[in-house]
Amino acid sequence: MAARPEARLDAPTRLTDRKRAAIVDAAVAEFRAAGFEATSMDRVAARAGVSKRTVYNHFPSKDALFLHIVDTMMASGGDEQATPYRADAPLRGQLLELVRRKLRLLHEPDFADLARVAIVAGLHSPDLARQLVELLGQREHAMTAWVRAAAADGRLATKDPAFAATQLESLVKGAAFWPQVAMGQPPLTEAQQAAVAESAVEMFLARYG
Image 1 (cartoon, helix red, strand yellow):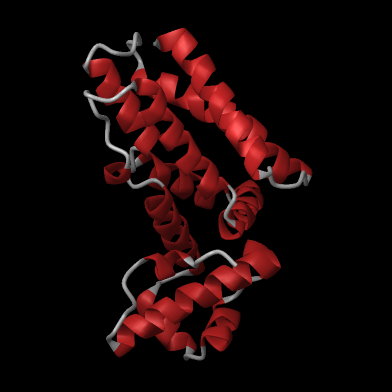
Image 2 (image 1 turned 60 degrees about the horizontal axis):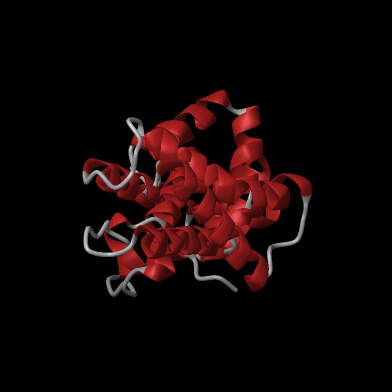
């Protein structure tokens, strides 16, 4: 079982922090099991072993709770400081590490299941979809930050680093995300993930290197 989003952080010591972590864990389980519409704050409270008032003290709405989970998971899987651009290292090795990191995130059960929940919820709630887009837009992904730095250093030939990074992510997600999330295909094996990473990086560098 993959670690819950809050479990990536230091274990909470204060009672209020432990309750907040329990709420998040319970919400992840409920959203995964029942979907967004069927999940209620009552069900989250019951699974977390806290009162509904306690849940609302931490999160004013179900939307806010879901957005927090998505933001925490994206921060844990896409920490820009974990893979900074290095001017003294070969591009290929750095890019491979970035892509492998992305593949690890995409293959976490929580991430894949919550992505399905977010897609369905967004279709039924344009307001939630807008909030999700705004939330993700506030965080520059590690891949975009890396491409931007490499382009500024003159090692990548692109005037639009954000678009170039999107192309690279699309190469990865086209094989290791959308088929699994939208069409029920099985997760890639480690060998398949390695092949996707290698080919995506080679194609990217052939165009921009």
